[in-house]
Every structure is written in C-alpha cells, then in structure tokens.
Image (cartoon, rainbow, N blue to C red; front, side, top):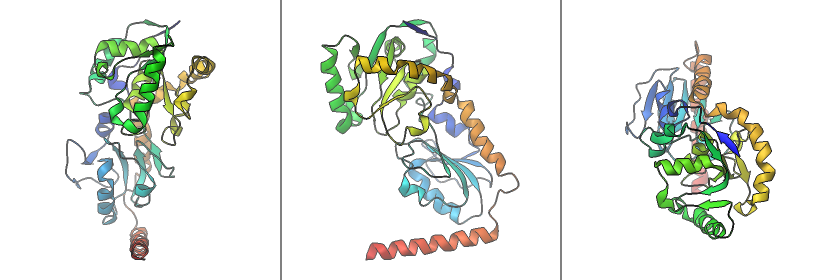
Length: 306
C-alpha cells in the first residue's frame, strides 16, 4: 500500500484564475468582458482565448511588445489562431495547445478557479491515507458525450465484474470530501477529454497524488515528464497494464514541481525581463510586419474567392 500526503496548499497549485492574477493587465476575461487596451509595452497581458484574435488585430496597430497569457476557455491554441500571431507577441503562454509553435509555451489547465468546489475543499485532504485501491472512475459523460459516454458505460460494466475498478455515479462528484478522499485512495484516476482535451480532473488527480490516465494527444505531450499515464485507447487499461506502468510513474513524481504556480510565474516573468529595453518594435520591423501581414491577408481573400 502507498501512503501519500498532499504537500501543496491549493493557493500554491496551478489554477486557471491565478494565471490571470500573475499578469500585469487583462485585455479580456470572464470578469472583464470588454477590450482593455490600456496596457503598457513590455507588459504581461491576459486574454480569454476566445478573444485572442481581437487582441491580435489591436496589437498590429501598435508597436507594443507583450508577453501573452491565454486561458479561461476550452478553445484551443491551434494552428488557425497561431497563424495570426503578430510580431508584437514575444511569447504566448496558452492552455490546450494543439499545434507546436516556436513562440508558444503550453500551460497546464490546472485546478478550477477559487470558487470551484474541488479547489475549495482540496486543502481538507492533508491527512495520510492508504492508497490501496487501483482505478477510480467519476466524470460527467455529458461534457463530451461523443467520447465520454462509451468510456463511462464500458467501465461501469467492467466495475461490476472487476474488483480493482471503482465507478461512482457522476452526480456524486464535485466538492464533497468523499470524492476527494476517493482520489487519494486510488492509485489511478481516469481523465478522458471533456469540453477540452486538457481537463481539471487530470490536475486534481496529480494534486492529490493519483496518476491520471488520459488519451495521448499533442495537447498533453508537453507534460509527458509528469506522472500521467497516456494511452491510445482506454481499452488498454487492465490491472496488469497499470501494474506494469506503476514504477515508471513513481519515478516521474520528482517532476511534480510543475504543479506549483511559482514555477510558471517565474517562466512568464523571465520572458518579460528579456524585453527590458526592447519594449517596442522598431519602426522598420513594425512597417515590415504590417506590409507582409496585409499581403498575406490579400492572398487569403483571393484564394477564398477562387
């Protein structure tokens, strides 16, 4: 049996709302649903991912260089949005990154916000507990029925025949302490894609010492150093399969510092420091970038009409 004690208080863990608080200014967010352009050159700027193209259009009209942080959304940082990335953005830190880009750094989705019931109660789980169960299933199929429903139904049937699987009703999950205790009691927790590929469940499991099992995806590849069990299909998940991967996952626990907000705040601030003395694009770079962007948009319109 494995005993685990949660060592990180919730305010120290990666959390979607804390990424906004780590920024100098907010262009657009759920709490500020309007365009705020009163940020300075060289600032770290937060933007809800849904509105990032609007921000890009504004930046093209200025010489301001910024560090961009996006989140608060299941909208991905994909190739479509990346192709509009202006020269003004020195680095883009984003969750749910589906396509690699030299100026994009993947951020974890992290825990839910400060009012999320799981986040509110996670500090109640600092007691030691024997981790003597294997696999825990508890998620809402309706957040992604095309993927989640079949997975949930399959494991629900298996749980009736295989004692190493615990499958709870989705209505029982949330902020209650029993749900969090179950996360600590089980070595593995299923974390299938929800509205987005990265999920809060994955980070909740890691925060409480369990190993999340997620589908292999480009979104999660940046976090392969963490003790996350990535699979091609959930049909692969058997008791023997979990036992086979347990030792490798245990060695990856040394990388759990990635769960701490300070780790990401330092990375983001490091890029800001690199802009010191270079907070604005030179006139020549700005004119050149504007010309080539206009040319590319003209070509796009011509191809669209063809």
